Image (cartoon, rainbow, N blue to C red; front, side):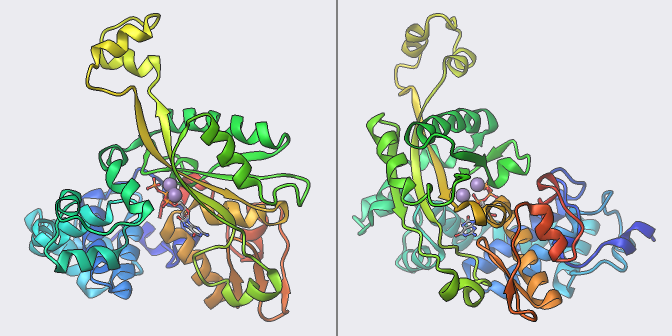
Length: 379
Ligand code: 8DG
Ligand code: MN
Ligand code: MN
């Protein structure tokens, strides 16, 4: 047995989960089953597999035998069966047949389209559609978001690198400061947790003078649009009212900030042209001629969120992720502390009051949790 295994706590928000860990041969398998459960609208089963995978990410070394799993939390019978088979045979039949299944592959391809959720993908799958090409071929009715999703499908499939995220950060900073000097911009999501690639780039924007941030998003998107930097955008207004939505809605994962789901047109830099072809950095136009079929730009998904200053710490915590870490924080707050946590506020249901915070550290302290830095929230 491994004495450290005894120390693994059961909520992901009580543990440190680094980005790189020792058990991806097991966690990838369990996450395929989690994903497949999600495709089949079985949330309970999906969360159970995700929690099991997450526990293995927190282990200090590679699992070599079932003995190593003694006393670990969150490992249900099904997860244990899968792990045992992988340890003994090198792979799990259930995982491999899921991975190969027509339903899994089609759902992955269809939900991979920006603007397409499980419900829509499932309806299309039952109608015999399998891929974005099938949608075009059969002339499916698509909303504006899905049209953009299909149009930029190949680019949006390509992971966004940290270098690309940094370029986008500069663009966003320029846009925000052009329309509201003194505003603060923070990189969120996977990149804040230290990931080297992501499926999008997430930003949180605020201003130290509360009220200055109101209706800021349309100004930002107008500026970006004028510069020709946006391929798609959909802005949703802030609809949070503390009195009406606070504690009642706090358990929901969707927040009510002013936000924008967008697709940026990212100019491919001279540096990346240089690495892709052998033109000199000085001669960017020559470099572009080497890519006669390439466009010189790519599409990148960007999420922008605007938060009032007084909610900034909660918004920061809520938009850093990972998704499982967030879910576990809210579950911990509700079940263990009788509190309701959202990206807007923390409400104490016993004292019937809001707990104000300026930093993430204060929120962890209210929740009676050891502070976990973003780089260790990769649950
Ligand atoms: P990735 O993009 O590299 O794939 O990973 P990620 O950055 O962790 O995932 P994400 O899908 O971009 O989500 C980033 C964080 O934002 C994640 O913790 C969940 C959170 N988030 C949403 N939508 C919403 C929402 O509607 N409300 C709140 N509070 N958080 C949300 O994605
Ligand atoms: Mn992200
Ligand atoms: Mn996002």
